[in-house]
Amino acid sequence: MATGRFLLVDNSNSFTKLALASDESILRTRKLPTRSLTAAGFRRALTGWKFERAVLSSVVPAIGAVIAKELAPTPVLHVGAKIELGVGIDYPKPSSIGADRLANAAGATAAFGAPVIVVDFGTAVSFDIISRARTYVGGVIAPGLEAMTDYLHQRTALLPKISLLEPPAAIGRSTRQAMLSGAVHGYRGLVRQILVEIKAELKEKRVPVIATGGYASLISAGLPEISKVSPNLTLNGLRIIGTLNPPAK
Image (cartoon, rainbow, N blue to C red; front, side, top):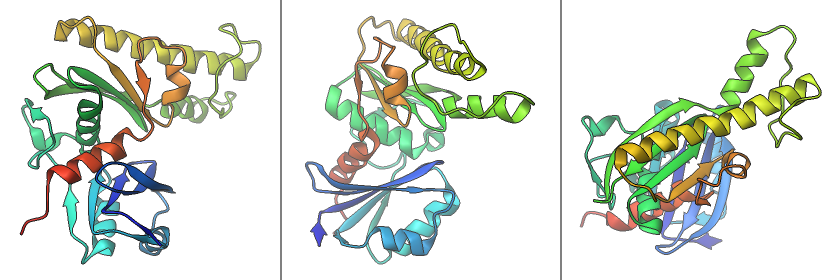
């Protein structure tokens, strides 16, 4: 039996990531496809883990409700703008900020200080910006890399579905190579230009840029603007949020 203080749950559109964690570190991780996640499957995924509390970030309300129900009677901390995050919020509608984005902000600021920019390569690619005053000030959302390539396959008669990896050259020598080049090099251009605009508005020349999410390593490999790839950034943010919000006595 593996024991920790927290169960961390990052319920995102593509995958639901689980972690057993202490106050200081992540101890074990597991990952489940969100689309096929059931109450029974969630219970099985927790086999062999013992924890005191859960910290839940969910951007899929229906699945998040199933998870919260299955965790009862374990205390569950739902991540949102009204709890302690370790960062302030300067945003018109704080309740509209995704829980995963708040977790990323908490994790990045705790690990790298402020200002800092987080780029999360998930189903969508999101940019979250924390100012020098350690305040969440906003972000950018663009279509995810896989969504873009799937769209080409679905909306054209002759373009295949491709597996995303580093293209062998900028000039494709086959349809697949041409699509890879357009996807990967083009996506790097999108990320690079958005970072240029963000830094200009922040009036900051040197800002750490932390990448996370499924395609972070692939895209960051050709982007010197990315300071570090942090695969468990969201989970670590949930761990930090858990320590900042002790249970009510």
